[in-house]
Image (cartoon, rainbow, N blue to C red):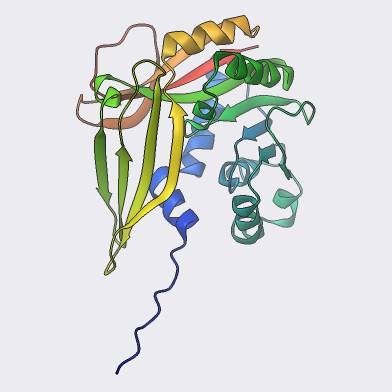
Length: 265
């Protein structure tokens, strides 16, 4: 009887980074967003819900004046980042990255030019009071004239079960939203991966969120003390975005959309 070959565990964070994140592209966009609003370049980034803190590492590579500070409650992704991403930086760049395994609601920490909560991570706050508390804490951690940057998604198709797949050279990325409760605004979502030559691995990452709308978020940001908010809307066709975000006041109805919200202190 032949022995079954044990499958090598997948590197879920590498697959996530390859399919969901583009840290080097995103940090340049955030720098330009800040310049668009403030007319100068930001220096200090704070990444909340930082996970493997790939964004912090990418920020430190922008230049000798760029420092990054990340917070996350989960030990596993932080350990991964310290093992996989931090060693790829130069000694000088590593010295400009500081990561803490700490709740994003905990007061204190370095004050930043830009605070970010990306990949819809703040959707974990389902109660209005909790999200407002988070926004208040973000504002306190910004330097004068600082900017809080969030991403958000919505559209009619996000209010019902939906699936999306993207084929890469060595794997297929699957996004699945199981539904949407119109009373609570809650939704459950998962990321599945199918590595080449293997069966689909389900629920590699799972999310239990409230899908906040742009008007709700803008109202809460105003209540938290932010003086102005701006929407950066993704261009492209109604079927697929092009990854280019432009500051917009009026947009057309789309079945699914992604946008950034920039809130000025």
